[in-house]
Length: 120
Image (cartoon, rainbow, N blue to C red; front, side, top):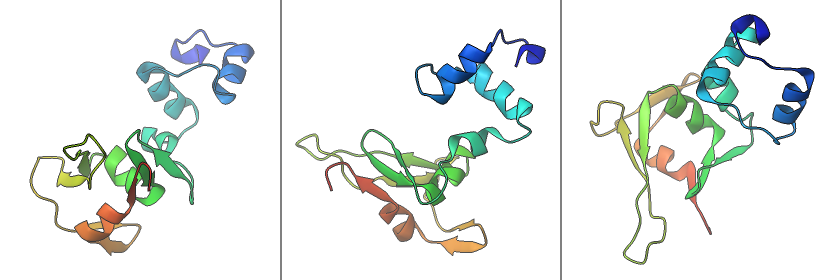
């Protein structure tokens, strides 16, 4: 990380690994370069984990296309302020049709089920 312009020490690495320090966007990009991986790989939880979005848990198979910019997940709430079924769109804002993830075609209905609303 120091070669990439970030003043990281062994202590910094330990703090990041144990969750005692957050990584900013510049550091995230540098980490991807240093580890010869993609930012999407760093942000995608390994299977079968889920990503807690604050309004629900997103399955890892949905995280990659979302992080990669293939789709946008728009949270919705009911009149009582409870999380509702998310709306899934393309990155250009068009209604979502089908997407291929790791060789499998996934429909919008399947994608919606890949997000579990908080409290369910």
